[in-house]
Length: 253
Ligand code: GLN
Image (cartoon, rainbow, N blue to C red):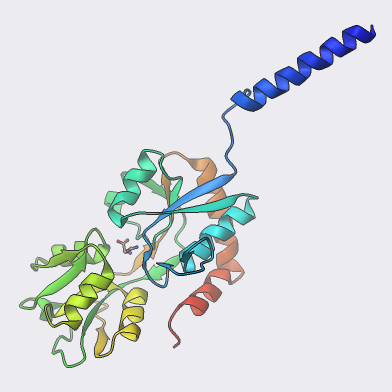
């Protein structure tokens, strides 16, 4: 009898080890959420010496961390080009993309979006002495955009020629150096660039640029993760966490 119990215990122990190794009884559950971002988009994501997660900091990075925390998980950040984010979700390299990403119909065909967490719009950054006052004034000007951003989509739809850059900083440098006349980019990021570079100003045209909404993207059909993200976002929107992050990371009014 005693021997029997011992054998049983050994069998159970072995089964537990094997199960542990192979994760029987269902898919192995990871305790991390791998977020992809493009840390070239202050104040939402940027590279800092010491960030909220590793070297990364910004509103989105803080939101990612909170989503993981709310679900008893850890957030990992993978930095990549903005253009690669949707593919990285589709092929499982990352679980979600948090990158100040605007909900667009063409993107919805590739990924599922969370509830929106931030209202944005495109603006024009110009030199202080520029005569550009509205979007149509860009018609005969040299326009710079960032590849794959909604700013590029807007200018393309307006039918104006433009040059696209990989990074916002590159486009802004072009403007500072007088090699282009206007950069079209999201308002909060534009504000940061204008603050960091002397001699620039922002021109708004609410009629020409529609309102945009940022959301987090996940793989199509990944409702399990999407539910976690949405619940956490709802909480952060209603308790003021996201509004506070906006104040903390944005340029002072
Ligand atoms: N909101 C813009 C877009 O979705 C820019 C986002 C970004 O650069 N991170 O295209």
